[in-house]
Image 1 (tube, rainbow, N blue to C red):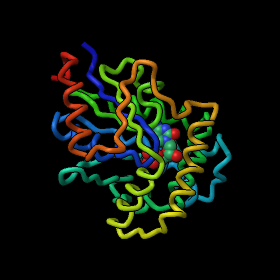
Image 2: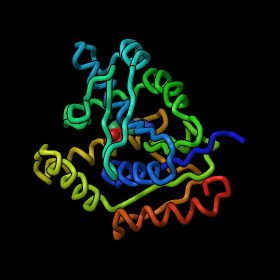
Image 3: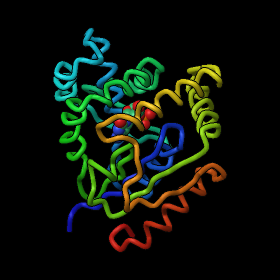
Image 4: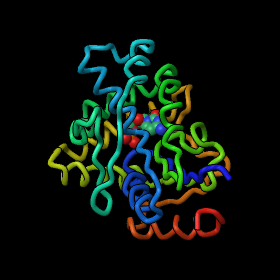
Length: 226
Ligand code: DC
């Protein structure tokens, strides 16, 4: 039997990171924050003075990332690059914007594809992002696609950034998220779209606990996720 994978895809601010981490912890599975990989490529490229539209140079940056994710607390995460904690840096607005630009480059996506597949290790993997169910793990046992209204997503992201001390205005954030969503959904390569066999969950009116409960119930119906 192949190593089981639960994929959770959706747009930014939908809460997929929070629920993915809780479920990974509950199941005792590995966790892949694929968005962080794109963020790290953008951060590293900016640090090295690499042009964010130079696909070939970005692919080199993407190919040698020594990255790992440590889960801490109920839904916290530490992102390590070569053992160095870069968690706060990758969440900055500059890296978020850069991530959405580099994510549109096919060379970057190709370089990160192998890297992402390597996270699939026993006893299982919870993978979150935009194309986990469509491109990276098309044979996943359970594919979830989370949605929420744009207003609710902006509010959630605003709260999350404020908690991390990264204050931004709600209207500016809302505008930036719309631009990123547009770029993520309209790109030619692996655009943000639900897999045909993904189960869609509208989280606008649901708490984190309720979303986790819905996915947990769906997971119980898939024999080897029990
Ligand atoms: O989920 P996030 O906000 O950390 O993602 C950062 C950017 O990376 C976002 O613009 C979409 C992109 N991304 C992607 O193209 N494919 C993924 N699997 C995950 C993220």
